[in-house]
Image (cartoon, rainbow, N blue to C red; front, side, top):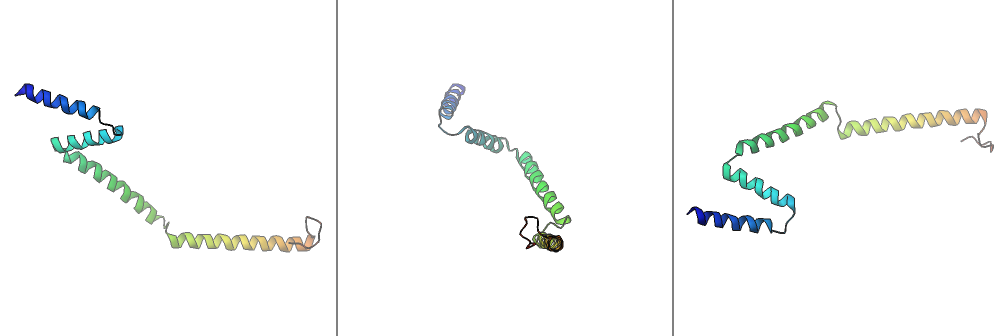
Length: 107
């Protein structure tokens, strides 16, 4: 019985080595085989829980800093208003002192 099993296993391993698929896919199948065979569900749940926890922490941090679309839009509009005020102030100064390019038309 052992000899037949060894022969069968050797054939499977040789077929697996000669399989023309990317290495990552082969290792994925090996990992899935080990998880299913040895019922290492605890590790799978731990990894899944860690990933979900990290996603939750990132989303919570994003929410706590009020980094949503409305706040970003409000900040952009405020910055545009400031830029417009600064440009108007520069135009007023240029009108009083004349233009820098010598045409005399200010802005």
